[in-house]
Image (cartoon, rainbow, N blue to C red; front, side, top):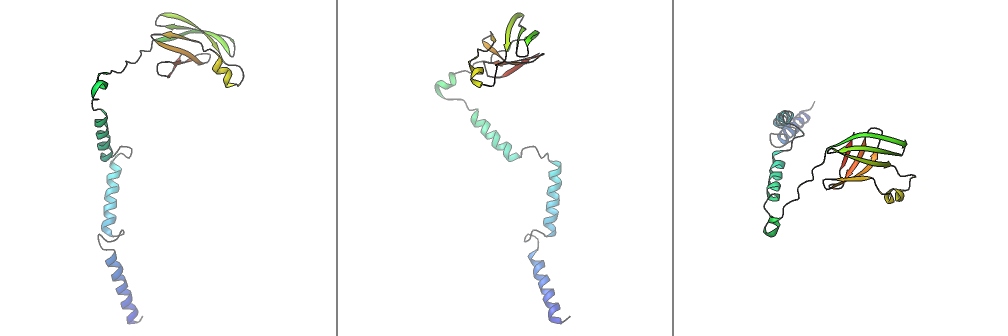
Length: 165
C-alpha cells in the first residue's frame, strides 16, 4: 500500500476515535458501561411501581385536594353510605324459563318477588314494564336478572349490583 493511503487511513481512524471520545458519542465504552449499570438498577426496581417524581406529584395533588373548604361548604357533611341489609335466597320457583317467584329473607323478614323477563327484543317494552323489587333500610332493590340459583338486584342508593345466592 502506498504511504499516502496508509496515512489517510490512520488519520481517518484518529478522527473517528476522537469523535467517540467519552462524553461525545453514544457508542463510547463509558456510555456502554453506564447503560449496563442503569439496566442493572432497572432490574432491581419494580417496573410497575411509580417513580419518585410521580409519587411527589400525587402527594402534592392529594394535599391540595384535601384542603379544608372555606365558608359554608365546610359545614356541609357527606351523607353516610346506606347499610346494605343481609339478604338470603330461600327459594326460586319457575313457572317457565322467563317467569317465576323468589322468596328472600331480608334481615329476618320474608320478601316475595315476582320474576319475569321482558318478551321480545323491543327495548321499549323492557323499560315500560314495572320492575319487581322491595325497599329495605331506605334502599330500593329492583330485580335486574335471575337464574336458577341466583338473583341480580340493582340498588337505588348507588346504582350498584348485588348478586344474591
